[in-house]
Figure 1 (tube, helix red, strand yellow):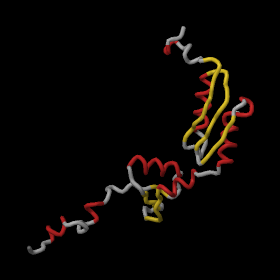
Figure 2 (figure 1 turned 45 degrees about the horizontal axis):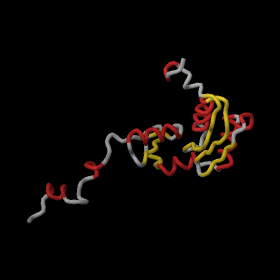
Figure 3 (figure 1 turned 120 degrees about the horizontal axis):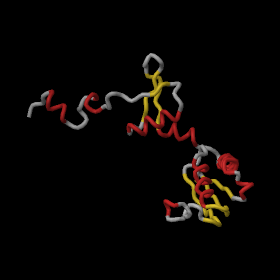
Figure 4 (figure 1 turned 120 degrees about the vertical axis):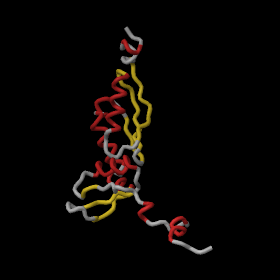
Length: 150
């Protein structure tokens, strides 16, 4: 069977790049914050994000790996920042971090304090997830009218 330009377009590996590329291209500026690039990459579902200069010329590519490096931090630094954020010493909480997983344990007076402690921990750079055993003496959330309380 003779080969024609139309036939070549449909053979594997022969499609023009124009048929395969994402258009319009999703790009980030070189001076944009890293978190902006991460959100763009996630929002558009692209693995790599072109970085352009003020004239729109390509100057580099940001990959998922590049973005993750920014947020990887030593466990000791994460632990210290979590302790400060949740005032662990004053609250009597134990804090440990292993490869971005923060572990919290201890007793708090109110359930709402435990929830706030987890949220504060999640906001610390380098924390990917929070685990642990936080306990409380009083479930103040159950006392709220919307949860069936008085």
